[in-house]
Every structure is written in C-alpha cells, then in structure tokens.
Image 1 (cartoon, rainbow, N blue to C red):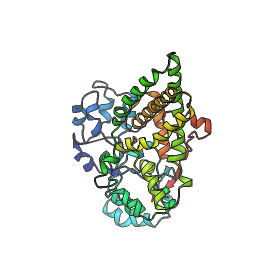
Image 2 (image 1 turned 60 degrees about the vertical axis):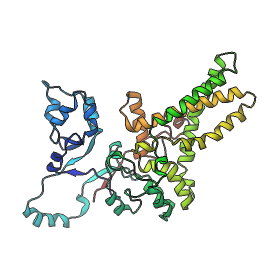
Image 3 (image 1 turned 30 degrees about the vertical axis):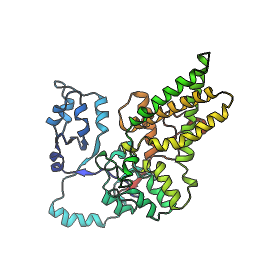
Image 4 (image 1 turned 180 degrees about the horizontal axis):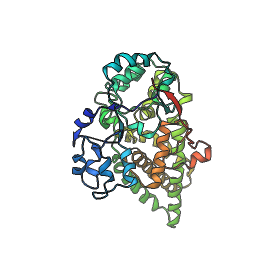
Amino acid sequence: MPGKILPTFTQADIESHNTAKSCYVTLGSKVYDVTSFIDDHPGGGDLILEYAGHDVTEIMRDVVSHEHTEAAYEILEEYHIGFIASEPASKSTANGEAKETAAKDDSSAPSRPVYASTGMSREEDLSVETDPVADYRAHKFLDLSKPLFPQIWYGGFSKEFYLQQVHRPRHYKGGESAPLFGNFLEPLSKTAWYVVPIIWLPLVAYGTAIASSGFTNPLEPAAYWIFGLCIWTLVEYGLHRFLFHVDKYLPDNRVGITLHFLLHGIHHYLPMDKYRLVMPPALFLILATPFYKLAHTVFFYNWYAAVMVYCGGIFGYVCYDMTHYFLHHRNLPFYYKQLKKYHLQHHFADFDNGFGVTSRFWDRVFGTELQTPPPKDVKVQ
C-alpha cells in the first residue's frame, strides 16, 4: 500500500509565503508553516517575518542574537509541512537517464515507514493538509469540499471499505471544518471547546450545592462526589471502547455506518477539526440522561447521594472534553505531552487500543494499553 508522503515545495513556492497571513521558513531541507506561531513567538512576530520565506538555520544558531534551545526545535517540528523539492533534472537527464530509470525494477523506489492501517508514520502527519481532489480521486470515499452527511448516507459503502477509509486521517484546509450537513443544521454540528465548561460547570456547581445540603457530615458528600469522578474515568473508557469503537459489531448498512460516522467516525476521519473535538451539548444530554437514572437506581436510598455522585461524574466529563481538545491543539506540560503522544498514537498508529484519554489507567487494567509497533517500510510509488 502506498505511503502518504509530505509534499515538496520549490524555493519559489517557499519565498512566496512571506507575509503574516502565510509564513513559511526552512531549516535545512524541511519546510515549516509558522503562520499560527507568529503571535506566540517569544522574540516577537517581527523577527519571524524578517526571515519569512527563507532559511532560519543560521539565525537559530546565532549566539549573539539568541541561540535557540532544543525545546525551540521541538516546537518548530510541530509546524513541519514538507520538504524542499530537489533541483529539476537537466533536459539531457530528462530525455535520456530518466527513461532508463523508469525502466528499472521498482525495487529501487524509495520507501517510507508507515502504519498500514492509517497510512501514516507519526503524529505530524495528522496536520498535513489533504488535497481534497487528489484524495477523492485516489480513494473514492468522501469529497471534503462537499457536505459529508449525504455522501455517507447515499454512498453505498460497505462496512469494510468504510472502516478502512474512516481510520485514514485527513486534514481539512486551513484548520477549518469540512461541511457536514451544508444547511441550517451545520452550526449544530460544531462546538467550540469553551462551550462545554460554560454550560456544564454552573450546573455541576448548582447540583453539588443542592446535594450537599442533605448531609450533616461534610466528608460524606465529598466522598460521594469523588466516587462519581472516579466512576467517570471508567465510563470514559467504556464509551470510547464499546460505543465509539464498536467497529467489529457495526451493522453493514447505511444506518449503522452513518451513526458511527456522526458519533465518532468523523473525529477519526478529521482528527484535527477543532470544532468537532468536544461533544455537542445536545448529544451529551442524550448520552448523560441514562446515567442520571442509573445513579438514582443504584443510590435509591439517598437522593442527595445520587445527585452528588452524578455531579462528580459530570465534572469528570468536563475535564475529559477539555483534555481531549488540548491534547489535539495545545502545547502542554511534560505529563500532558506524554498523554498527547499516547492519544495521537491512537489516531495515527493503532486505533484498536489506547482508549483512555485523560489517563491510560483502564487501558492497563483491561490490557488495551497502546504499545506502538514499529511502522513497516512501504514503497512510495
């Protein structure tokens, strides 16, 4: 299976991206799109723009100006988008040697390590912009320039083909969202990360305050609340593994495939879509209602205990959704960097394991901890 390759850019291409709206720099043979980093650069955006479209190797090593640390190079790698194209062959080479090369056995073709299930080799591949036209021509799955829902519903895809394609991540242009419905329902399919704490944290605080009034010992409601928080971590794991990734038991029909896509498939298909990383309030309300009834069934003897456990669980959900968003879209402290690496491996390397998002604890308990195998060398055609 052919591997997904980072694109190449000519020197003219790179030099044309020399403004605050589109800023490329190079470091050796690598090309970086640092547009979104301009405002965050500690030395000021003007310094980056001074080298827009040019190589930054010397300035980053310049002791007088500011010799950059290893951390700076690690940050730069997050913006890696491709490589500088090699110089074009001469006419004589193109007319003569090129023909001879084409006639050679393709065993001499370059190879690149990729994971066969996703066509990717590292987390940076998740952010490489997908060419919608070329991708649709190659895979005949979904056209990212058109609403996705009707394409899934009327596409007539087999379960096998759908699962193969939906777990091969794409990245929509400019960090925007691909159209899902293409009509008045479109806004309902998008949720900014801050909507989650704005809606649910006040309700958690209110419910916690009401439930606390039913106890005389302050340690008792705290224990119920913390118990609910701990229960959430198991619910998080269970939902991710047995609902969102019910791939093997997915009905082989358009209803099952469409529901899978809307619930979680779209996230694996477009994992860097920042408006589809947290759960829309309406969907969460549907999923959370049975757990409210379950809490009152289990703690039937104490209404206040049931509410306290439920509030602790909802707070856990808020933490989960915030963590999920930041793992995809923010630079994080050391512990969360390790968690980010773990979660993104779930996307680009092994989606059949690594179901914990806020913690890998339950993955260890149930034997689904992600142990990333080395990628295989795949010939690039």
